Each structure stands twice: as structure tokens, then as C-alpha cells.
Length: 145
Ligand code: 4IP
Image (tube, rainbow, N blue to C red):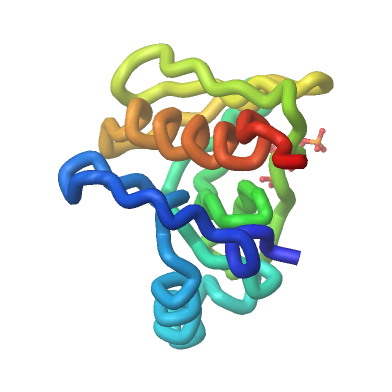
């Protein structure tokens, strides 16, 4: 179950620094309704897409262009944009961490694999920040009694 639907933080941040994980549940519902019209919606198991963009995912010598979709859940799906086929998911865990190399290249480290990703538009830092935010939301919040 998508945790924020039932347990959405109500803490508000100033507009400028407002992050995706501070959405009210009504706002999540509204965005999900709109997302139903989105061509990627059927590939993300009903989860709200928080960030999306084309990246080149390198494995060995070659890179494949993929649509990377960060959602609540949490999930990071990658889809072949030419065929609209879901190719895989980057597995989440407490150990997942990002590492920006420069404005284009960033790594997502998982226990069994490091994903080499390149954002041709140069938003690698934004990707790392968004993934870190979602990671903190799911893995760093104090457990309430
Ligand atoms: C493939 O290389 C693609 O990079 C795959 O990515 C990748 O799977 C394969 O790794 C790799 O062999 P070629 O297309 O050049 O053969 P994608 O799934 O995005 O198409 P993942 O999903 O794991 O990155 P293996 O080790 O999973 O087969």
C-alpha cells in the first residue's frame, strides 16, 4: 500500500523549498486523478509519479535510454520509451543511496548493484535530491509509539 495515502505528513514547508513528500493526501489524490491521463500511468502500479525523465542507463559497454519514474511506494521504474515496456525497477532498501558524479551522471548504489545513470539534460543533482528525499521519507522517519 502506498504509505502516504494513509499517513501523509501535515508539516508545511515554505513554497520555495517544498518537497514532494510533504504533499497532503487530498493533493496526492488530485494528482493521481490527473496522472490517469498520463501515458506512463499504467506502468507504475497505481503509484503517484514524483519525478520522471529520460536517462541513459549504462550496463557494461552500452547504455540504454530509459524513462526513469520515481514514485511513492517507493519505486524507481525504468521503461523503454520506444516500446513502452517496463524493463525493471531499481530495488529499494535502507542501503540505497545516490551519488552525483557531475551535472549529468549519477549513481544509485544498491547492495547488489550500482546503477550508472546519465541525464542528458544535466539534472543529475535534482535526481539525487528527489531520490534522497523519498528515501528519507520511507527510511529515516522516527517510528512512533
Ligand atoms: C542489457 O544490455 C540492457 O542494458 C538491460 O537494460 C540490462 O538489464 C541488461 O543486463 C543488459 O545486458 P543490452 O541491451 O545491450 O543487451 P534494460 O533492462 O533497461 O533493457 P537491467 O534491467 O538489469 O539493467 P542484465 O544483466 O540484467 O541482463
